[in-house]
Image (cartoon, rainbow, N blue to C red; front, side):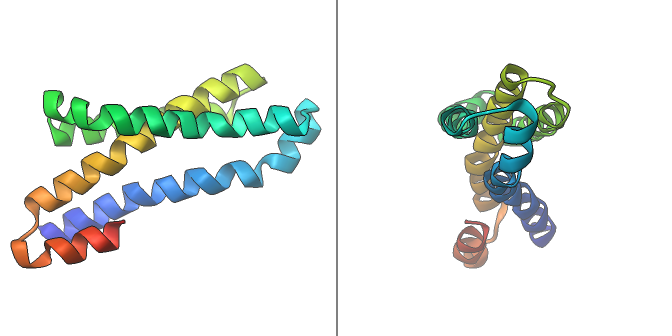
Length: 134
């Protein structure tokens, strides 16, 4: 059971890495399609980091209120919904808002996934699971 939980949580945490790299892949197409300058694109790119910060700060609080599992599932849904909305965004504002809330979802998932994994892991595997997940 713990290995299956580890695998599922590792997939969710990998979403964080994907979110950090996807904006760099979109740089050229978005600047050409929307006619963005470097500073505008940098501001749009930083919205994900603002969302990550907000999510990291709120994730633990939400997990204490609603439970770790419910918070993790809710934030995974938030990540998927707003990630999909950012893919179909038609302007800068909607793209930025979608990226921010995608960041909130990803940022909340990371501390909650760590806590959930360590809570359910056998003592002899905790350090290995924690270091591998990070």
